[in-house]
Image (cartoon, rainbow, N blue to C red; front, side, top):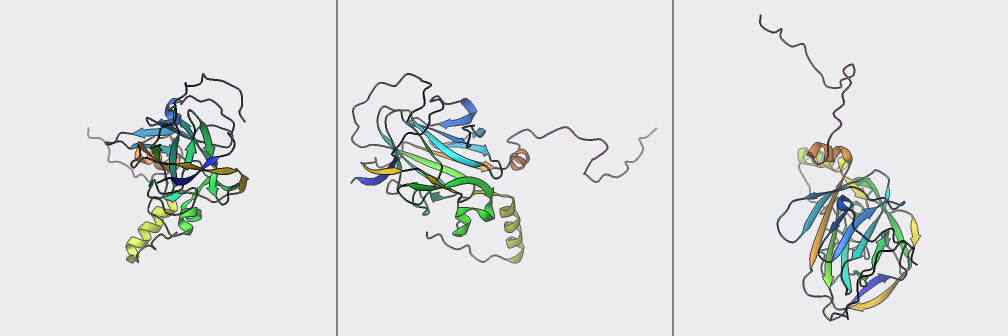
Length: 265
């Protein structure tokens, strides 16, 4: 059965079609990249994991708006279900990355960017990194997938005729989440502390980003899944994902130290 899905009516500016190493995660069919308002890529740090799902950490920046850039690496149409903090970015509903959900369609070798939560056929409200308490998902009491940008890619059942891959160019082209169960006081305090340190995605300013409806018969299972766990730099440092600043001021050490015993003579 065909499913209703969405596709951008206009192709946004393409700032290079090739993936750029640690800037993107590439599945067999689609490249996923998170960029800022100037088109600069947020750093990604791949994680080794079993199975077909691709996983990576992403270094988030407080208050920074971001866009999700997808590139179809195949000669046929594909569709992507995209969820941020566990919520489908088109419907806002809790997502399971299932083929029955609203999804975006990309044509052969097409690149598209998605900059926010869709609120109508013409409008979105911008994604931006913020503290979890101010996130869109927390407004619905949904903490089931906080700090994760997820995507499932579906190929089309009836493949269209493939076209040659274009040569690189430089020209521009035109809910119902369950409420958290009551916790004991100590566990609640620890959880509140954890949430305070966690990043989330906010519901930002309105942007004009029109779409059209198309028909797409998705295959039963996704060809790939991608999960990006975004964290603040200090959290990635603490987890050992990135290198911490090793420079210390010998006259300004915040760590409390006591006088050592003298060495034996």
